[in-house]
Structure formats: C-alpha cells, structure tokens
Amino acid sequence: MSRKTVHIENFGCQMNKLDAQLVASAFEEAGFGLSQSVKDADVVLINTCSVRQNAEQRVISHLGHLKHIKESRPDIIVGVIGCMAQRLGEELFEHKAVDIVCGPAQIPKIVELATQAIKEKTKQLAVTEKIRKENQSEELEDFESAYGADGRGNSANAFVRVMRGCNNFCTYCIVPYVRGPEVSRPPKAIVEQVKHLACGGVKQVTLLGQTVNSYKYIAGEKTYCLADLFEMLSEIDGIEWLKFVTSYPSQEFFVPILKAMADLPKVCKYLHMPPQSGSDRILKAMNRKYTSAEYLDLLVKAREIVPDIAIAGDFIVGFPGETEDDFQCSISLLKKAEYKNSFIFKYSPRPDTAAEKRLADDVLPEVKKKRNIGLLAEQEKNSDKFSQKFFGKEVRVLVDGPSKKAKISSNEMGQLQLVGRTEQDCIVIFEGLRSLTGSFAKVKITRTSPLTLFGELI
Ligand code: SAH
Ligand code: SF4
Ligand code: F3S
Image (cartoon, rainbow, N blue to C red; front, side, top):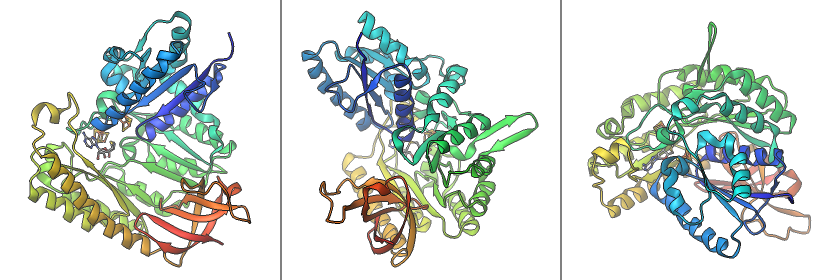
C-alpha cells in the first residue's frame, strides 16, 4: 500500500486548533503524510464546532462540497471529528459523504478508525455516551502529552491544554455536553510538555481551558492552581511568554493568579474574562454565578495588582427575555470595563441546553443584530482609546509571519508586511524580513486603529 495522506480542516476555538495538531502528529507518527489540500488527500478530516448554529452550518455546507468531490473520487475517506461529531453522532452518517464520526474524547482512536475505513470500506463511529469517564481516561491523557509535545509547525507559538471539559453549565452553552466534565491535567505532564516544546523552539505557550483560572490539581498534600503552574513554567529556559485563556469571573485563585502576573515577567499582562451580560437578571438566567457589580470589582482588583493589564470580554446579545433595559446594562458594563477588545455574539439556541429547552428564543433577529452592532460600536471607542496609548511607544512583538495582506512581492530590500502580537495581545503590523517569523522584534508605533497598531521596526 502506498503512503496515505491526510488533510485536516479546522473550525472552532483554540481547543480545536490544538486537537487538529494532536491528530496531525498522530497520523504522522503512524506513517501518514500530511496534505495541505483535499485534492491529493486519501483521508479528509473536518474538525468541527457546535457553539453556535452558524458554526455547524458552515460544516454542513462544506460536507456538501466534499460529497461532490467524492462522486469523482469514491475512495476518499471523510471523517467528522470534534464537538459536532459528539453532538450528532450517528446522525452524521445520513450525510452521504461521511465515513468516520469521532468525538473529542475519542481522538486517540482516530488513526485506527481511518485505517479501518480505508481497509474495510465501512463506516466508523466513535462517540461516547460516557464522556464523564472517558474525559478522565489514561488513553486521552497519554495522547495529549505524547503528541502535543513535539513543537510541530516550526512555530514559536504553542497551545497546551491544562484542563479538559467544563462543569459550569451556563444555560446557553453546548460545551459541557460535547467536551465532558472538567478535568485538570497533572502539573508534571504539563511541565514536561512545555520543556519539550521549548527544546523545539517554542517561545510562547498559551495555556488552554474553558475556565482556565479554576485549574486545580491535588497531589498528596499539595493543591496546584494556575499560579503554581506559572511559577513552574517560568523556570523553563526558552519560554518567554505565558498566556492563558479563558477565565471565568470568580474570586477563587483570582488574586494569586494576578499576583503571579505582576511578579513573574514571563506571564503576559492579558486577561480574557467574558462577562456575557451586564444585566443581573440575565446573568442569573444564564447560570453565570456572579453579578455585574461583582464582575466589575474583579476588574478593579485586577487593575490594582497589574496596572497595565489588558482585558478582553465576550458578550451574548439577545439571550431569551433580554429587554432593552437589560441590553443597556451590557452597554454600561462594557463602558465601565474599558476592554481592550470584546467578542460579541448573537444568542443561538443549542439543542438540549437548559436555555433551549426552557426559554423561548424571543428576541427578534433584527433586534439581536441591532444590539450586536450597538455593543460593537461602543467597544470600538474603547479599543481606539486603548490603542492610542501606544502611539509613539516601543513595543516587543512576537512575529507570527507575513500578514494576510502581505504583497507576494517584497520591496527592494526584501521586506514585506509582517504581523505579530504584543504581550498584551495587541496586533502589530510592520515591514520586515520574512526571516523574522517566530522571533521577537522591537517596533515603534507610528499609527493606531481600534484593533491594530502599525509601526516601524527598530
Ligand atoms: N469557556 C469560555 C467560552 C467558551 S464559548 C467562557 O466561559 O468564557 C466562547 C464564547 O461563545 C462564549 O464566551 C460565549 O460568549 C459564546 N457562546 C457560547 N454559547 C453561545 C450560544 N449558544 N450563542 C451565542 N454565543 C455563545
Ligand atoms: Fe460554556 Fe459556561 Fe463552560 Fe464557558 S463556562 S464553556 S460558557 S458552560
Ligand atoms: Fe470549541 Fe466550538 Fe467545541 S468553541 S469546545 S470547538 S463547541
């Protein structure tokens, strides 16, 4: 049998990006080649997201496209992995293109499933009814620590999961159903993994968890929290920046984490802590366990401990029953919070969540749209103010590489438009050599816009 190749397409959050990398490494380890396009791949995997309906719709229309391809190349194997695979399971086989359905807790099996599908030409299903048990399985932990550790992709950036799953059950959210219960990974495994990444040239590690600030691992007498991880990871040579997403607004561990940020130079001064709404009535209906005043107190505390911290938030507009007054509370919270940026989403009912079962999706689409635009406009003013503070300043940037808009041809000195991020997660655009990709650069900011800083290499 000639060497088979796999192509992976990714939808969804950073968790999914990491899973796609883990899966790619597992296939390489098993002797498969990686392919950049569907065209010459034997196996095509779609890593899916269920968080909003439009995320699922994009996958469905993509499957339609793959069905066409399969008509002329019937041997191609199509697999759906990730959150949508877990949510829909067998139902996905109704789609003619699909050969494999594999949920997030089952990814250690993915190579085996693909090999079977190629050999036997049969449909392969691996989703779990017992996600509670399987989220804690040794198999999953081994898969994460073995394959996440090789610094693939020649990048200076890596994601490392510190927690799987979520226990919060916010009433609108599908994540606990598809990703299972919260499990914190052993600190030793995380440290080993980061050491390995550092050896491979990784300079920035982003620690991932749905509620990353509630990381908690008990080993004998000692309880490890995120601040302990920061301390251990700060010792690792080669790692220069540590970031972490996403934080849930809670008092627990908050001060130690912020103190670690103030005291440990490698911990970046960036906090992504979504409020979701500014209305206490809506927060309650969402099963978020804080009031808007408690949330704002946390931000005051954060700024006391780390004065130059950059804070980002997420909001949902049009949650069931959200009145104009409730929406105005979100506007008011957004103004007071002085975010660097926020992500605003229109409520999308997710099957079998508490909100979908008990509450009517009663805010009209045009009202959701109007509120979305309203919050974004308010945020833009904040973001602009935040960006302007950098005018004329020198910032340190970890260079991601050529920007999307980089001209194919560089200028006579071989420079092209590069993009990178600062410690506070600000996007910076400047001209430089492609070879700066993956390294740190000093840039003087000469122009600002709400979401981007522009500058010159020093
Ligand atoms: N664990 C993170 C967020 C995970 S989902 C947290 O708790 O903050 C990412 C974002 O998607 C959420 O912050 C929320 O704003 C949004 N989101 C989740 N479910 C949604 C839904 N049903 N409709 C619209 N937005 C949703
Ligand atoms: Fe979803 Fe809430 Fe868990 Fe975030 S904390 S993943 S919004 S249930
Ligand atoms: Fe992420 Fe979407 Fe799953 S946001 S955890 S890929 S539902």
